[in-house]
Amino acid sequence: MNSKTAAALDDVYDRLQWAGEEYILEELNDEVGGLKKAGEVYSTEIMYWIGYTYRYWHYYTGEYSREIFKIADAGTMNDCWLGFHTLDVAMAIEDLK
Image 1 (cartoon, rainbow, N blue to C red):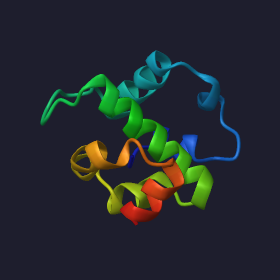
Image 2 (spheres, one colour; image 1 turned 90 degrees about the vertical axis):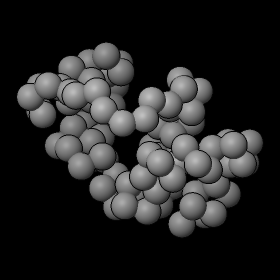
Image 3 (spheres, rainbow, N blue to C red; image 1 turned 45 degrees about the vertical axis):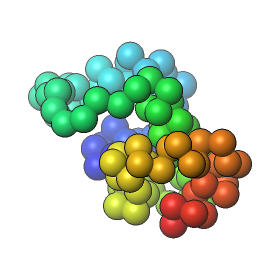
Image 4 (tube, helix red, strand yellow; image 1 turned 30 degrees about the vertical axis):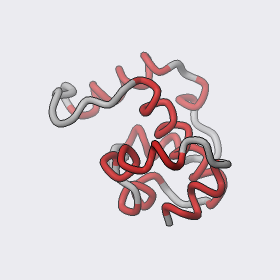
């Protein structure tokens, strides 16, 4: 969420917004000089919800990814998933804030 790649996704228009996840991950991998596996591994379902919520949050509030991640990092999102994933996404964001 602190990368140039993430910042580009926050732009009004950026070519990455239309790219598939594999291409975006390649861009990120190139930017950081190789992605490292570390920390907790989250399920695909949780990762989908987290990613969807982060993008919706940006478009809903206009906040940038860097600021959103300061409020709700991956651990927080993982902890909240069980109770929040069935909520309307705007309601989940308001509760996270």
